[in-house]
Length: 444
Image: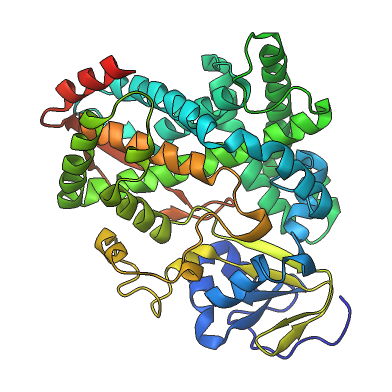
């Protein structure tokens, strides 16, 4: 890192030699939520490496938009690139812009409508398989659902049960593994035959092999409904598929799990939303999904769940040129960290910030204070797809089932996403649900 080290407050819990590693490993989100009281920029250390945490929405938005030319993704992604390839999830600068331009047309309105049909068919199969009164592992159910949906959208092929299980196992192992590897003090630790290393290496190989199998099946299939073009060079096609599978499976499944969990804990909000959605679904014609995705009561619920449980709890950047932020200059090479989860729970922005309250979205909230899909050139390319999936799945499940939780879920930040601990629910037929499901079935 070039230049003089900036004079900013140091986070609590520093230990000789390892810095703030214990705080990050044991209670990462509460630790990051505690830093804003120290100032807009707070230094922590990962081992001996200084990392600068941005604690205000204004600074985070500035780095992601106005100053994006002065930053790259940082050391966490440096670790991931050799193993996961150079897809949109990881790529930088001119190459990232080039690939984004190639892929962006696949996420237009027509494709989103096509995608919604895949979501609806898949979610209906899942919902029809549920048994009243039986406990359901919600995260497991939704991970399988999202994995099948994104694979079918990308390649226009349906996963076999064996492929679905491979993807369900591989994705969280990859995302957890590369985060832990980024925290190793030296590259040599990656070669030690630890359980986490073996699990990660096996998951990466499994994911690559699965993508190759799906590419081959897609190339042999008739039609052009697949989102990823087979005209892309094979290696880049694989890299982009890995990126989109990782992002489209884990973050959507995690977000949906929290949406349905919060509704299972707030029966009045669930019933109110069910009434709003049910009328909307009965009024739906053809393949127009805009009214579902744009339903205001549903939008408020999804926004509130994404605020309270933003899936990507940690993001990083690295300054490639001196970066002036709030009167402090970070030198080229400085590692920068920010947590959208912590920002979205800031009590100075959100009253009763730890409370699930969809009605707060009836009042205007500053755009910079809520960026669940990121911002700027690295904003999630599939944000409209993810939103549509969450809207359609939530609508279909609530139309058919009344859901209740069987235990309190806890957050686990052992991956790049805030996954729930064991999240079990029970379902009972919602009043009028079977009739509504039959109506929907006839419309597809």
